[in-house]
Length: 160
Length: 435
Image (cartoon, rainbow over all chains, first blue to last red; front, side, top):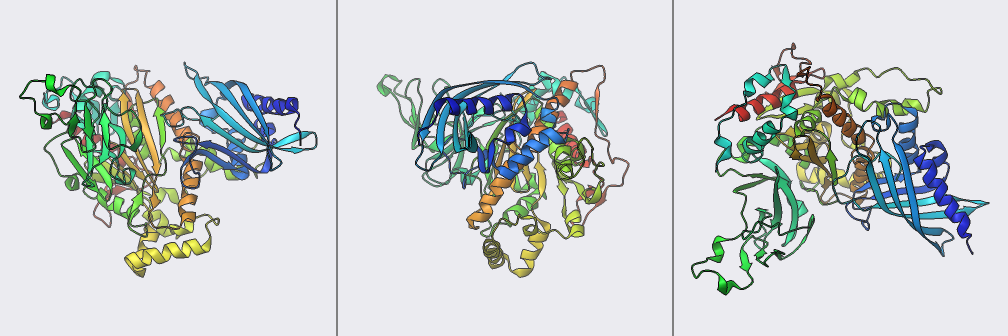
């Protein structure tokens, strides 16, 4: 099935913007029920069944992750909420045999915590797998490979 | 050379009182320097677990205080702790965090060392004096290295208490954890969280046995379940102490302390396997239980599962919380590295070990639902300490309560007492003010 490059890019940019603007309830609607949000730890290509990940959320844990920030008022690392903005670039798009659209892109996210002097930089490469449906897509996989995933890092409470 | 015995100009007894400590203990760079010499370069320090280096030539780099080390497994299967420092000009000789290498070669002048630390080769050896002895220039071996059930401890001092004396009753807490494995062995080579926190190392150590902070720091988790049911914009009532107040704060001696959850578990009747999620198939649970019973017998197995793993800080840098090993490395007076590694049960069904990885990811990584908030609160705590017109930090919660020996003859207080921190500071004062 040929894909519409423009539509795929628009989806990636929208996903990034909703995360940046911390419109997390809206961001959550982009994900399908069988989704996996995966941020590997210690290197990019580890077996998550045998190795620890920074984030390995199925849909129900992702819902909790969002609710903790948006509903409890006690997720201190996001109270006050961070100011975020990211660049997404180097987008490569593949039409997979399994009917999913697979994309790879780079990102550079700057996080400013209101109570800190120095911003935090999050940099990495993202794999998205999108399921086409109607006029839009649903996220099935977002795998974020941080360049510092095998280094000492600060807490990661925004959506990379 | 022995910096540790140099007398101090700082009057620690004036800074550590029974119910409070002075803020400068967390913020004064001169005190940090003295801690390196009197604690980190003299006492037993946790450096890793032997399962991180299972094979000949395996290594992991790390630090004792600020000093770079390599933990290696030699051809004799011995675990060694070597300084990561070429004996020629002092370069670090190993750059990777972990790996396998039969030799380490310095990138400066090509001096090459075996994984046992012996100097094996040099560029243009013929140019050195004729009396140069290669065997005198091996990597510096940390003088004392001892293992307890796979936990590797090292001391930069040639003399002092044995590890067994140092651990005292806290060793039983390591046992409680390892005994939950159907082979009696745990492994710690399934990845590690590596984090940088913006505070003094002692704040991490204190917090690790602070039962009082849970309600507020981790309030998001305590409220989370109710939040889905509460009406929009409405807060559920704050949680009461409940069974949490039954936890014993215990002083294990030598600065070690724990939050003993057995009294709480006895009341709730919760067993270790009872805490597992329904996602672990029953067949795996049965296999696990059968393994434990083969090792310990039925009765002891029941006791082990009822007591569960411990929650212990072994001074100065090891925190064995339930199924994780956590440790800290000081970086400077206001910055600390912390490492959290899940420990899996050797010989247990895969479904059980994988479920335990998933549990850690939920709670304790940089993005974990609990630890991220701890890190934030520690940073705020450190920022607040810059306000020096107010000098003291309190740790007097429960100090008015009687201290009694428990069933193990270990002094304890209940009701979220800060006895744990007071015992850490008492030991700290001993170390910092002794000759």
